[in-house]
Length: 125
Image 1 (spheres, rainbow, N blue to C red):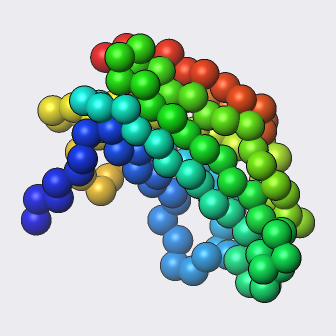
Image 2 (image 1 turned 120 degrees about the vertical axis):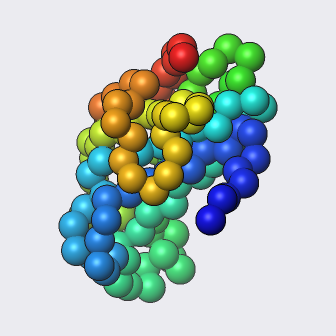
Image 3 (image 1 turned 45 degrees about the horizontal axis):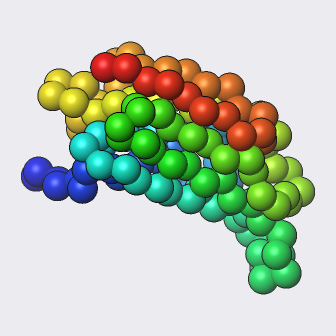
């Protein structure tokens, strides 16, 4: 079934899991659909408590600049017990025959090791 995705969308693809706490989302594939600027905020918490109601969670904002072909990963805001302090993002610029479908992309356009600090990733395709 075809799925239409708006230009500028940033779609995270995490590991395949049967339940939320099966394994940490250590590698997240970020699929960027070029053609317009876009933003996305990744939200994470402990998964199994109500601590988020007290502000115990973290967010990471992503911004795609289509003109410059850059993905800005902002500094992480917040924290929670058990949070991954470092993680890997595989960035895929979606195009014909690249990054389409539910399977992992054959080859990411960039692999970024993120440590919570703001990072700007220049991408070409």
